[in-house]
Length: 441
Image (cartoon, rainbow, N blue to C red; front, side, top):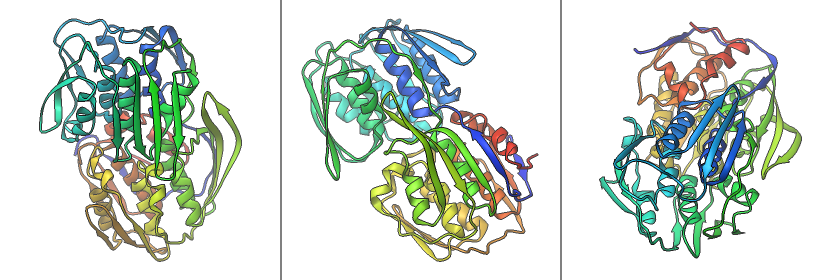
């Protein structure tokens, strides 16, 4: 197995303070909007992961000047549709669904054909969800079955659109919002609930946006052609990355952890709400608002007893990247947990709903999985005393990190492949869990 690690000891109780890397969603959105601003924008604590680096490399190919020194990234924006590039360029987004889908939104006005490609995992994912609505603006696409590689040719005469987004995908919604930036008139998006980082950043930048929030959807109206001023941004810590340590602490009796300066945007804290319903002690302290985002310190206290949960569907979109971890938590619960309406999990780097079931099977937890749901029969007394092998599985970073957390909680002798997968979103992950006391070789 390639780049495997070995974990053969459960983690001992710990009491630590931890800082987590910058938020990936905000890092990518800052870079893309800075490229459309006029003048120099600066960011500190920008996540230095492959997804973010690939985003910056794509922008460089599109003629944007970027300088990275120590912890500061500078982007010299050229204004709306200010990309300047040679004909027939190719952009490689690696593994990043966020970068690839959002960049397509900015390219609906491209002057010549641009090819977009990605790695093996990204090339298996659905892009019709963005190419169909983006074509309504006037862009044209060449693709096979809606998968990468995709060639896009923008239009000189974009038209504002009205569109109903039904998947609850922040990537689709954000792609359309970015396309609306340089489109005359008002674009209207009726979007199912999902993360709202793009809306918050638009508001902070004073881009003309009107937002009405309803129980099951948001109504977004954007007036295009408004110039964007350059802006500086200190990226807060990523709650999706923090979630691995939240779960590790929550399921480690007598452990205590404080995670500093975490982005606790209400559309991202589903994991906190779900864990509280399961009986986990989590407190949020020192809250503040920073450029539209809510930030705070998280205090987690370990508990060996968790209640089972029938997870409210209303929390799905706010925890979409954390469900693999939540399945591990449910494995420790005293009873049967049920999660449904999760077909979107299979549109990620790997079919995560299926892979979540596979991990549970490997550790001896009974479960029943369908194409959109999973029922988990928890065992609060589970201790593993066998060898478990996690082989290469499309190099999904969250599969790798979840397996690491499960090994530290339940024990056993784990051989986990593809440690390089963490470079996609969380390069310092192994360093952080070693700091908490994990023994890895």
